[in-house]
Length: 486
Image (cartoon, rainbow, N blue to C red):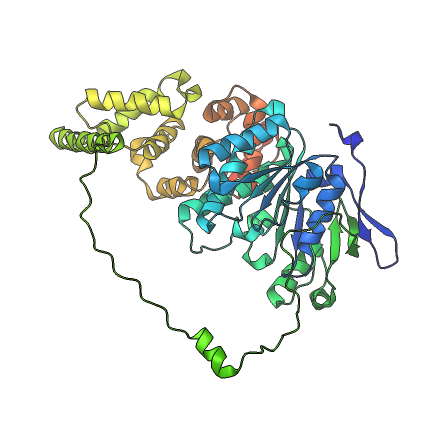
C-alpha cells in the first residue's frame, strides 16, 4: 500500500465549525501522543481514529481493558486473548501479524499486571523482528501506555518491566523505518517514560487537572505556562492538537462521533428503591449466620505414580550436582587464562559474523579442554569480554575504572549494539578518528555499510553518544565520560 492510497482522516471539528483532519501518511512517519485524565474522552478519540482508518492501513491495538474488542465485530479484527498464550507464541504471533498484514486487538483484560507486561513485550518484539520484506505500514495503538512504559518501578518484576519498556522504546524510537507508527495514550504524562513520550511529534492533549501534567502538556505544545490552566476547561471529547499531521499551531478539536461502542459502559445513576422489608427483618436477612461446613476426615493420599516429568527433574538435579562436583575438582579459574581463551575466539576474522551462541559454545569447549568448568563465564560476561578484546582494549585497561564505567553503560543497550558502542568508546578514549563504516559493520556483524551507519543514529537516540558531521569527517562524543574522537 503506497502513501497515495491514503487520504486525510476526519477527526472532528474546530471551534469555528471547520473540519479538523489528521494526515495519515504524516502520522505514520511522526507518531502520536494522546493525554487526558480518566473521562476526558481518550478511548473515544482512539476509537474514532481507528474506525476512520480501518480500511486504509493495518492496525494493532494493545488493549489492557478490553475496550476495543468490539472493533472486531465490524472491521474483522482478530482478537488475541493473552491469558491463553505463552510468551513464545505471542512473539511468533507478532511476526506473523506483520507477515499476513492482519489487523488485531491484543486483549489483556484477563491477564495479571505481570502477564500484561510480558505479553506486550513479547508481541511487540515479534513485530519488530519481522523480516524487511514485511515492513508494511501499520498503526500500533497502545492504550494506557504508562502501564507498559512506566517512569518508575511498581509491583511487577524488574525483568517484566524491562521487557515491556524496551519493546515500547523500540516502537517509538526505531519503529518508523520498519513502518511501525506508534500511537500511545496515557492518563498521566508524569508517569510515562520520557524517552518514549519524547519521540512523538503529534499531540492531542485532553482535560487534566494536576499541575505537573498541565505544565508538561503546555511545554509539549509550545504554550506559555500561564496558559496551561486552560486544560482544566476542556470538555469531554475536546483536545488541544499540534503536530505536522494535525496543525502547525495549537488548536482545539472536538472529536466526532463513532460507530462502535465498548462492551463496558460507564456507571449510570439509578433510583434507590426502598425495601418493603422492615429494618429488623432486613438485619436478620443480611446477618444470618452461616453454617460452618462439617470438617472432612483427611485421608492419606495414595503414593504418587511414577511421573516422567518428575524423573526428568530428578535426572536434571543429579546432573547439576555432578557438574558442580566436577567444577570443584577442576582447576581454579585464572583470569588471565580466561582472557586468553576469549581472545583466541576473537582472533577469527569470521567471528564477527557468527551467532553469539555459537561463539559461546566454542568457548565452553575450549574451557573444558583447559581444565575449567564450562560455566566458568556466563554468556553476558563472555560477550562483554569478547567485544572489549575485539575493539582493541588489553586486559590491564579493561580492568580500569574508566572502562568498567563504559561496560556498565553498555549494559543498558541492546546486546547487538554493544560491540559498536565499545568500538566507538575505545576510539574516543584514545582520541583516535571515528571508526569507518567497514569497522562499524564488522563490529555489528553485518556486511551492510548502510545498516552499520544507522546504528550511530540509534545510539544517539538512546542518548549514549553525540554524533557530529558525516562520512569521513564525523566525530563522536561518548555521553558520560565526555571522550571525543579526533
